[in-house]
Length: 247
Ligand SMILES: NC(=O)c1ccc[n+]([C@@H]2O[C@H](COP(=O)([O-])OP(=O)(O)OC[C@H]3O[C@@H](n4cnc5c(N)ncnc54)[C@H](OP(=O)(O)O)[C@@H]3O)[C@@H](O)[C@H]2O)c1
Image 1 (tube, rainbow, N blue to C red):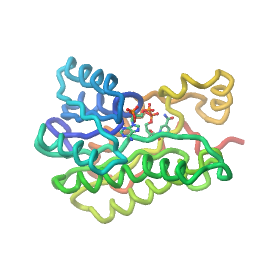
Image 2 (cartoon, rainbow, N blue to C red):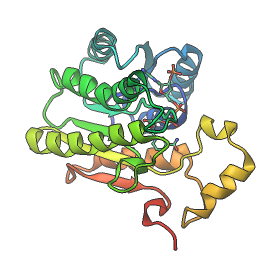
Image 3 (cartoon, rainbow, N blue to C red):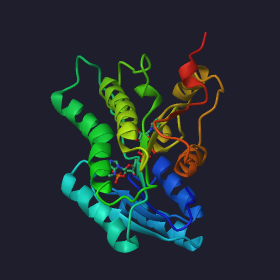
């Protein structure tokens, strides 16, 4: 897909990976809807950055786990820019909990935010997405078989469901709409500010390339998938070798 002039919605794009995706798409000429649930300041900051660089973007607040908010978000893309060509389902979050201590509310919250949000946004976007459009979901290394982690079991299960959704939808929507996903490893976003140097060293020990990925690097994978007319049903494992395991 030639990206210039297309319209993209990036959920959870007020900071972190989503922010970098919004900026990277805008650099390619995509008109972007920036979104967050409550971080308005971050969202407006991203819009200002894009506009200052000569791009087009607007901010739309909304919780992607709430159907009415999802409708408002996608409607904003249609009314502001006329259509939706690219949907990036990025909003998500890990909350630690073991299987024994996880409450039903924890499971529901993790599934709603990390899985159902992609279902809701895709369902709504597909109502008006023209042929040639594309959906890019955000998974995690934790979503791969045997790579889920006990301490984040609900998050891992939700991201695993994203893999199945991606491939099933890709089959169903071909040849009109392509559906792919990115499964990042350790990306240096704000959660790393709350992590000790000792913990970071332990993580680096289990990453073969011994480095974290920057949001700007991972954003390049999303741009690649948006442009790649020959790919659908692909889950890009972008993890500095993490899922290879060590030893
Ligand atoms: N960072 C990593 O190492 C890593 C690794 C693998 C996968 N991922 C995945 O990558 C995605 C982004 O992660 P990140 O580290 O960039 O996160 P982040 O820095 O915490 O940013 C999350 C963004 O999502 C928004 N958001 C959260 N809940 C939302 C909701 N219900 N509705 C709308 N927006 C919402 C946040 O805004 P508000 O504050 O306003 O809610 C924020 O803009 C997630 O799906 C995550 O699971 C990250």
